[in-house]
Image: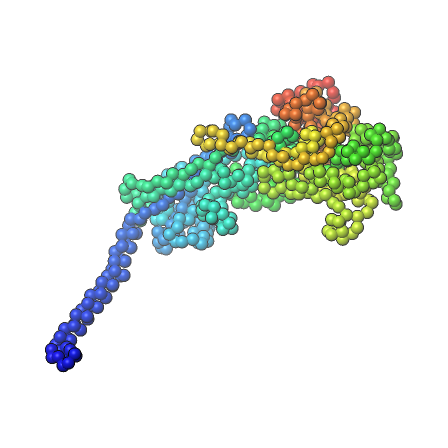
Length: 618
């Protein structure tokens, strides 16, 4: 190397050596890169296919549901399994054979299993659930043939069981596999693709309390799903909390049998707390059937039933309250002092308003009737007169608001509807016609556009028994620890509304309702001597003489010396879809007698037949 001034010159021999070093280094780098990307990938893929870490869910046991007696669960769990397939571990040339074997063992159609595998948009490495509710016998058969079933696995997934079949279906509801649409909404709340969630009723309303928290079991398995060692990591599940409802299963059974196979509903509640003791809807459905292999088909058949078995009639079926509305009218007359209580209105069977004539239900008329007689005999002419001449539509609407009609009660069940209290403004906006006198005539006896639910009428009667206070109707009584049974939460009564109506008014309304039973329209049908009853009958017009809505609302025991905690409110509604037979008060008679005598349906009927009053409808 020669140096000229500050410049250094590299000789050609040394330059060649440097180039050789760079070339060799680059070649070694390429060889190593090839080894890492191609050779090692082949080696490690083979090892991964031979041994893998598999995560298996441990489904949390859903909380049990009890009636108020907290003895036997009305919603329990039965041991069962779910079968899954990991598509990435299922070779294409074995797919059809594996699907056929699963179909045979699980008793599910080939097409259904194949659709689960192809129609689910998840990673090929994610376990796809192809069947649930699988028995231990079926899992045992799968285990015996595991060498033929690459990618197939299973885990414990308890199955929901409803011990009273269809009796409480409208209360408890049912559970089912989460849908993709539901998963999109609930994913951030910890729900997974294989989650089971409440679809209706208490199961849906309190799903977050009932569902618990799933666990995980991590195992090392070979390509055929066989464990290669005894080690496993476990994240234990947390069981869901148990619920104790306010429902009395014995009273629910009594009420259901008293209603019979008539389309309608029954509500029984404690007015001082809002506790629902019975909530009957007919027709019903057995939620256990949805968990059978053909559950989806059974569900579709019920959904197409014109009788609407999925309609929770106590909180969703709307109808005109008919003459039960006269209890509200009586309240308004007394509180507004619209006319003296003993002032009479003459009923000759016809009410003339403008150019319109309306006939009282008693064609020859009731004669001269005052407020108490008007309610007891359910005289239409009396209430048409006070509605049009003494109260007016605005006052009637105001009392509807104070007593909760046209408003949700807030019951802890999904799907409650508002009902409708019509007004002149509503009619102009919705029907595009003005309010006329005939609308007030109709509304005065609970007909026309007025629409209520049975639970709203139950709360109206409860407000009367409580001197103006009503409570939110509720089905949940307690939440309990699933292991110790310790009470975690007790549901306290929650005031829904308090009216400004005087205690004196409510006292006199209760007296008038007692007159309906003692000397009025219900005298011949409410024959029980087990308890003193106050109530009101109602008959809703439909335009067909042989199809009328039958109502009966009541509270018992009646009396100023009665402890409020002893009282119940009862509402029975038999829909106009049934042939006319005025069954609502008849069913109420059986329910009241059985409840206060602690008898079942057959015992109540037998005891009533032996009573001092003739049971003419039996």
